[in-house]
Image (tube, rainbow, N blue to C red):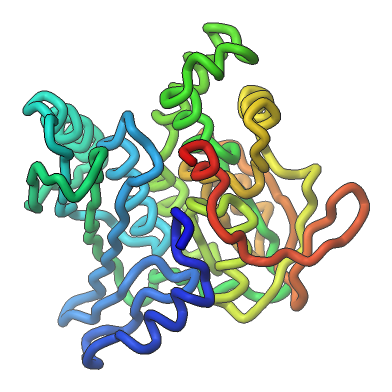
Length: 324
């Protein structure tokens, strides 16, 4: 099998046949397009999500913390804590592991999130460090948002710019090749996109307004759109020329031969909402750039150079091509 997330059809078969026992407390399990599980407790809902970082070699703690808290944020939940698993290859130093934990702790402190526990080991089962987090949050039943909530007629909004995570990974892991097309100032800019990966603020601002929210990770914006459509039983019509991609990102994608619409994009939230004007007002009032890229429909397509084409689920994220 190829590197990257399992294809959606394979993953669906895997989940369907291996879901264990059913519990009444579990209101929603993770599924295609739904990254969080939701548990019913006496006084509210507990939201949980888990994700590893495997497509980067630097800034692992920062990335790992944000991609998991972002999943929690898409439900409108307040994040409470994380469990951290670190698998370090043989030859790793204490300093290597400590750097990851310091990054996680620094960002968690800023979001009032506690590092509650986890597991750390050095093992020859990996050839580079793997960091995986499980995040926990709480939300009321009335405020819960799911990816499956998108409705035909909703506007589709993307926050900030696409490919922030992918751009940062490329700049940090391939600096010499990046310098062939970027100035030193642009390279620093690309690296610093890693400081924009949180979408927690977006999630809190759009409670009670958004029909559906989904963070844009592996597979890029087209993968996220496909997942939202799959979860909600709808489709989408979006325009390529409306996609917010920064100049530095475009330069790197052109140089490395990558499609920015299929490149890992943590730091951007995909939002379906009936009242786009109000959503934009809230976001822009908080200093968050937001762009309407299309609408929720019954069919699934993207307008590319005036031609409507069908979107199929990406086989894997573009970033993995760089490590082959």
